[in-house]
Amino acid sequence: MKLSDFDFHLPDDLIATRPARPRTSARLLLAEGEAIHDRHVRDLVDIFRPGDRLVLNNTRVIPARLTGTRTRMTGQGEATAKIEVTLLEPAATGWRALAKPLRKLAEGEVIRFSDALSARVVEKSETELRLVFDAEGDAFDAALAQVGAMPLPPYIAAKRAPDAQDRDDYQTVFARHSGAVAAPTASLHFDDALLAALRAKGVTFTEVTLHVGAGTFLPVKVEDVTTHKMHAEWGEVTEDAAAEISATRAAGGRIIPVGTTALRLIESAAASGQVRAWRGTTDIFIYPGYRFRVTDALMTNFHLPKSTLLMLVSALMGEARIRAIYDHAVTQGYRFFSYGDSSLLIPSGDS
Image (cartoon, rainbow, N blue to C red; front, side, top):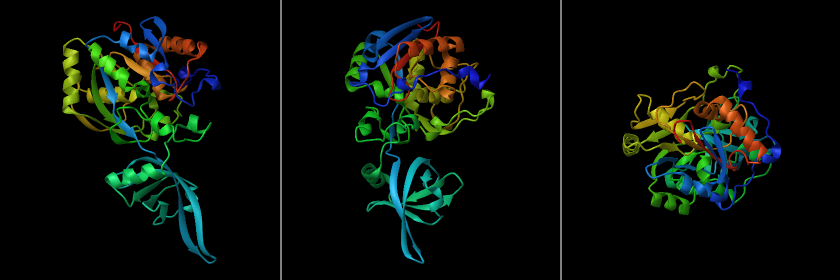
């Protein structure tokens, strides 16, 4: 299975740099078996049916882009350097982070971001470092909210800087547990009114937590994709969540994760064939040939060429089918990636 099998041409002008407003006005490509329908996210009220269970990732994106300074004494007096930091993920103690310029930092030095927040460099490698902050818990969250910027994906950050609007746009309406440095972007299309309308129809919801890491944007560098090593991310499926999913399956309802992060988590929790309570890190890599244990359909945005997420949707729908779906999306001008349009992928036999 070659990396080139998952390549396609994407015109640059189809990469969305802002989301649709309102959220539910985004376009929705509905792929049911062999059929393709052009709809909108608001039409999900007509598409989903009573007894369906949507699995939502309730992680909260932290404002992980920070700008600070470090000061040290030199023969000419105090020397101050500007340091840009991007938090990657929590470590056993502190946070893994990137810094620019990394060479201007030494272990033991302090980076000051504001009067309320600073961090000490406790470990440094050739590519990243580990920081321990001087605030924890609510105090850390409050200080980070004051000084941090949302960590927009590289393909958006290359086109524009994050701004105040991204604090709302790049966060789901049901975000609860802080820890992600990238959004579960399929969920960005929901607003409170759509959720209420779906509940009124008899659609049920289960929340799980997967803290999406910066590794989600790492390219696949091996030509034989089966040898790619996935990044690990922390997640949790509670006892209640597992019981809800199992009850829906027993009743004949469909399990539909919203986003690849929710899908990867529930498939990890169903390693035994049945979803069980689960907590820890997952590096599950889903590519064609994978046998899905609990997922019946998937709501997801449109993914990068040669990405592990494109491999995942190819596993669900079939490689030829995904090529046809993406050809249709490009031809019809769907907007791609994190702030782009959505799709609902229902494999043959599940429509």
